[in-house]
Amino acid sequence: MKENNELILHIYQDSEMSSFTLKKLMNDLKEKDNKIKKLLEDIFKQYEEWKEKSKKLLQKENAEISNNSIIAKMMAGSSIKKEVDSDNSDSAIADMLIKGISMGTIDMEKKISEYSKEVNKADLELAYNFKKFQEEIIESLKQYL
Image (cartoon, rainbow, N blue to C red; front, side):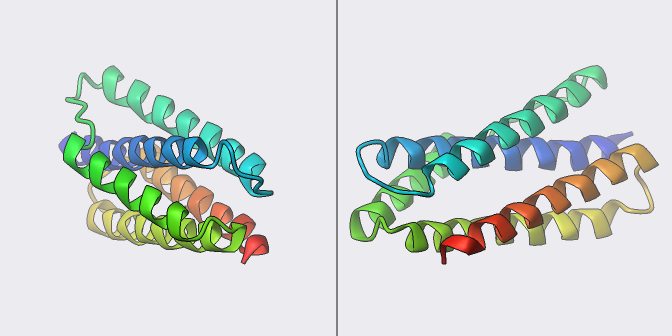
């Protein structure tokens, strides 16, 4: 079913972009003394798990898997570098991530609403779980604000 694939593809693309940006951020913070770095590593690993889980589901359905564009990644990478160069405090980093993940949560909510009647129950539950995962990350980042 095409709608199932689109919902899972959204999870894959969101996870893939989040993994990319977190890796870039961790690299930019490598020589810095931030307390938030351990949490970033944990979040990165969790996004990697979501990326692999959604990729396997798409492969099982023989669905086309498209990554985020290199331009989007370059823009995100340069934006992260600019933010870290201007303020690399844990508070600023947490704020930046909360804003980005909140946008992802809103997008996921839109996809769930759009496809809730067309997709199978298992894929819908996966989407809800992904959204919940993102909301939990936001809560864990708030301690650094």
